[in-house]
Length: 360
Image (cartoon, rainbow, N blue to C red; front, side):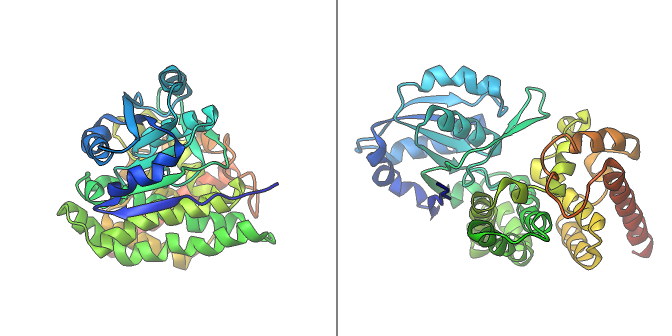
């Protein structure tokens, strides 16, 4: 039996007002797991929203900083008495709590405090080694029972997370349309592929202004549209399409760069490097008109377009390509993706950057 689950969600400055009415059906004891900054921003607001209700947060736990198997195993004993898990924060904090809840068979609710990835909505979890390099994808068909998106908290978060989220979101459209090329998608896949247009075009329309609004800590329609694109549209596509369509060359490139110490050292964000990966994908796929449009958009908001922007050099490319191909991201693709193809695409993109710099 196949099923695709679509979480319900609440978005707005008053999103937390409905926590008790949504969660009461699942029990009385909640354990909150999140990042330190995320908990500082949301913990008291969540607890306050539950006052007078039957649901109580019995324990608040730091996720450990990394979405790792080690942290999940460390946290598991402290969640055994919980009826439900509250996952609070960005991608790594949410994925820690999500995978823990999925493995324990407990209902979980997500409270994104930044809009950087679709982690709050998708059932997929991404796990890393303690050093920050990619370990594996954690596959499940069970997403959050409900997603509470407080836009005021997101508007007050550092703008860099929204900025990176735009890159990660746009990748979903280009990856699933290329990965599925030549196939006849069934209903669920077809729904996800069709919906993926909502991961790219709206971001190009609303994204630039949304970044300015976030800088001003102001909730606006442009910011809300961008947040919905990052968290809900992308997560919905991820939940609908099979894993081989929800990944692709942009994420393979990102995974490749996680092997370089500079990626962690200079705190390059997931979506930031994925945005660069989109340009590599479009270059390799010879979608030059689309590549040039995305290039201009990325330039306009400061997303990386060349190796120097992510503190990498051509000397690193063989290691990056080897790591990129170790994952599953391009095992289903309309043509064979080799290390030489990735390196060639990156070098072609470097040349395009040089040409653009010379003409401007």
